[in-house]
Image 1 (cartoon, one colour):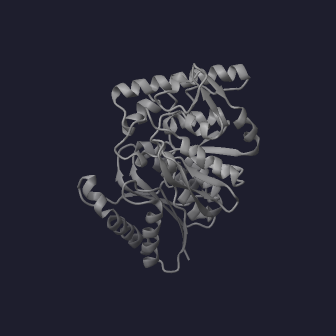
Image 2 (image 1 turned 180 degrees about the vertical axis):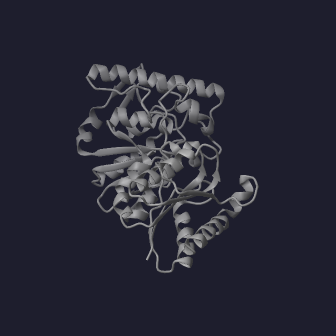
Image 3 (image 1 turned 135 degrees about the horizontal axis):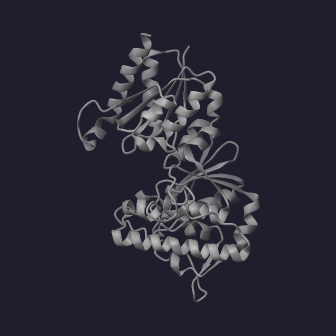
Length: 380
C-alpha cells in the first residue's frame, strides 16, 4: 500500500489548499484504491492558515464580532487547536477583502486583530500563532497593540488609536497594562515575506499600492512608519528595553505588523511554512511516505523565499522522499528547487489562455494534470 502526503498551498483566486487536497485525493484513489493518504493543506502565514491547522490537527472555530479595518463591526473567527493553541489570521478582522472598494491604508486599523488576540487570552490560550498575511493596513501594529492595552498619546496628552496616516502623531507610549500580561503568553508571528519596516523594500513601498495607496500616499506612509520606529526607539531606550533594527526581515509584513509584534510583544517572527510543518509533525510523517504532492498557484523565483513548495521539498529531501509539485503557472527561476530535491513540476494550464479564463476551469485542469501523473505512476 502506497502512502501519499498531500501538502499544497492554495491556488490563489481559484482553489483553497483544502480543495486542492480533495481533488488530488479523489484522483489518487481512482488509481490506487488502497492508498493511505495524509492531507496537510498548508498556508504559509497568510489567509487559510487557521483552516490548515484545523484540517491537520483538529480543534474548533471561535466566532466573535470584532472591529474591522475601517472601524466597522465585522464577524471574524479564529482556531483553537486540541492543545489549546490559538491560531489567528490577522486577515480575519483586518484583511484587504473586508474593505471592498474603500481601500485606504492611511485610515485602516489592526485593532480588530488585537480584539481576537485578547479574546484568545481570555479563553486561557497561552500559546498563540498569529498569521500576518493579507492585510488592509499600514499601522505598524499599533491598532492591535491598543486593543491589548497599550496606550498611545498625542502632543496634547490625549489617548488615541493610531492608524497608518497618524503614526507621526504619537508622542508617548504606555505599555504598563500589556507588560503585566506578557509573561503569561507566548506569541509566534508567522509570515511569508522578509521585507524591512520602511525604505525601498519596506511595508509601504512594496505592499501599500495594492491596498489603495497612490505614489504620494506611499511616500507619506513610509514617513509615518519611520516616525513610528523613531518614537518607539526613544521610548524603549528610556525604559531600558531592546529594539531590533528597522531592517529586520519580516518587520514590513502586514503593513508593519511584523515590527509591532516584535516591539510590543517581544514575539518571534518565523517562516510560516516552517511553523506549519513543525506543528503538524511533518518530519515524523515522512518516515513512511512514498510520495508527496505539493503545489501553489505559481512556481517562480519567489517560491524559493519561504514558500510552501520550497519548505516541503527541503524537509522531504532529508528523508529521500520524492516530491511532485503541481502549479497553475511555472515560470523562470525554479532550478534551485530541483537542486534541493524537487522531483518534478507540472503546470495545470493546458491551454494558452489568460488567467481570467484559466481560473474558470482550474479544478478540472487540476484533475486532468493529476490523472496524467498518476497514470505514469501506475505503470511504474
